[in-house]
Length: 405
Image (cartoon, rainbow, N blue to C red; front, side):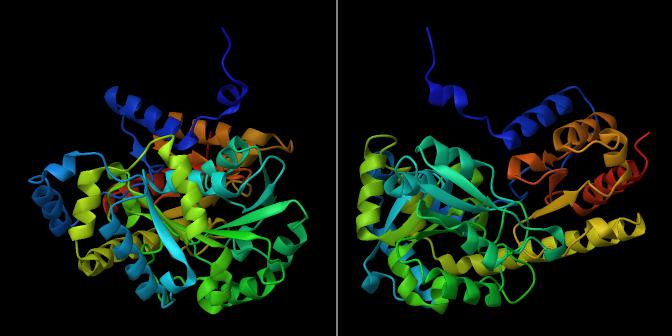
């Protein structure tokens, strides 16, 4: 009996593997610090929780949902996004599909536009699932590198150089996982000017962290600079990060109707519709009530980012630091640390996984290897712990980076 080639070639999510390892060490009674998780320690707002409870009184909350999504919720998302971005989406032929998390939305969107042999440009560091999704649909990821000294802001000229006759799409993830940065207004302006020249190219804008920024001004987007680009823009988002509700698995996609129709056909033959109860609760919830909730999150992330900067400075590791401003991640560069010298023994290569394994085993700090995000000799750490455990974890980490023996 043989498994399919696609099943055998699919990689398990490294973030999930590290989390499983962390949980196993916790059960063994070891002192460990989880700096690898992609979820905050916040509960959703009481108002949204109450909305879910209220919807439990209705039979429709327990029945099959529409494949494309609750019509009231879809209209609400379309209006909310139009107001938030100050663009007219409905008049540009936009529609919405609600899916089982933003990952599901991305997967369906790629399925709607890709054919075998197509290329999709990714900006490194990229989210771990992008290459797997692209390859699952028979297309090929094409990587554009970025650098720590530029705070991982991609070069527009390098992106343009990567475009070929086979390029079908480019994925823009801003705010960025794992970089913890968003691409600024000037970058978005230059990108919009460049991409206008390639009118057969789709732009997938992954905006799941759009509310999670902690230094003003907040993120803006290329299609706000030039609404003509909306015709080939696919926007994905969800409630996992903005509502602090990763386990509820509700994402959505906004795009022109023909793309949404194609995604709906794919979804109808796989998962069908998304949780009726949560969709109805969202349709009944006032999104404006999230403002104070987001400010509390931003205040916490600002404080933790300052702690990170100061602890790195005190450990003489400022050369490994850059200023994050959004999401809740930081990419740690090992290449100019003592632990890298100890492990590499002067040989070229990517030692991300080996170094992260040592850090977890020796000092109990869980990080995600940077190789999973396309960045050699690095790791992603998350700004998610309470301040005191976070500082303790960072101090142990910096001490080990400087003195691993």
